[in-house]
Image (cartoon, rainbow, N blue to C red):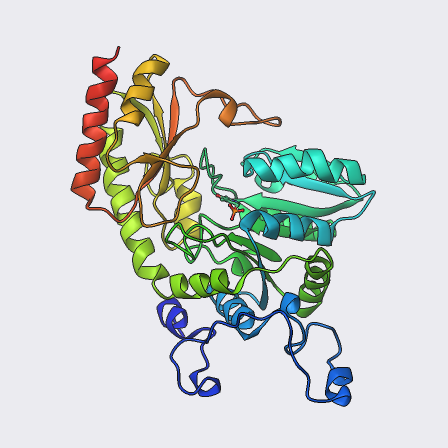
Length: 389
Ligand SMILES: *Cc1c(COP(=O)(O)O)cnc(C)c1O
């Protein structure tokens, strides 16, 4: 089945639910068992069947089945947020004395978790250049158990050579995990050597800025049991309504993404021609340093991109941002609405590589509004930028 058809069918079993098109939303903690024998029967693991709310209900299983299909993996584990999916993966796969290679462009809270939590547990993190490719070999240690990737980085948009990194990691006995939020649907992690793919479903999968949700998709059953056991041990379990919103969002993911990407390409192409703009960071642009890798490995894009302006005073940039009609200020992306955040200075942390933008930097999310309205919004913004200087 092609991806668009999978999005429609995955995780749906109307025959189990009186023919209802969508799986019902089970608001359940307690599950009643008809007899002691049924209660004691269980499966090989505590995670088979419907036994207790925290281990999952048919709503959870429907969502997990659908996400695994979309990511092209074996099985998935739903979590209560994208960050819980990341920390759940790290804690399941690493123990005291292990070494983690973490991409330098990773989502800031992931970096915070490595520095503040993993370090305290005796797990060492080395940050690496996102553009390292096969040269990651020089950073591998005998105790390197995991190489964590994120491509493109969600603030600066460097595209990683995932197959090259995966080959070296596997040869050194390490697993490869990826934060695939930007590449949802357009990057097939498991076809490129990734063992564990994480989604911040909060972004495009939910797609409507109204729920927090995450997923961990894995390549095989052994990894599933290892990570599921650990996630369950920490007591993570997403709520029924969040899972429902994730399932609902998935059905329209493909059409939404196409529109987000089409608008983003239109806006970024126009932005590149503007005198106020020093650089646009969006891999689908031929001028982007990651364009060749993106063309090789991705089948599409999304609505998230970066812009570096020529030097301008902060009050002028703030006036530009404060006055937007459509690009409102908010720390997220993937919803139907356009967003912007300033990423100048401390917002971008690098320790293995240098990040020195020549001027103020911004991150935009192109929403589902009319592209011409969005362009006019940006144009008026440049007017405020100029007027305030
Ligand atoms: C938002 C985000 C996350 C975290 O997801 P939450 O659901 O907000 O916890 C992880 N990775 C990336 C790239 C993100 O943008």
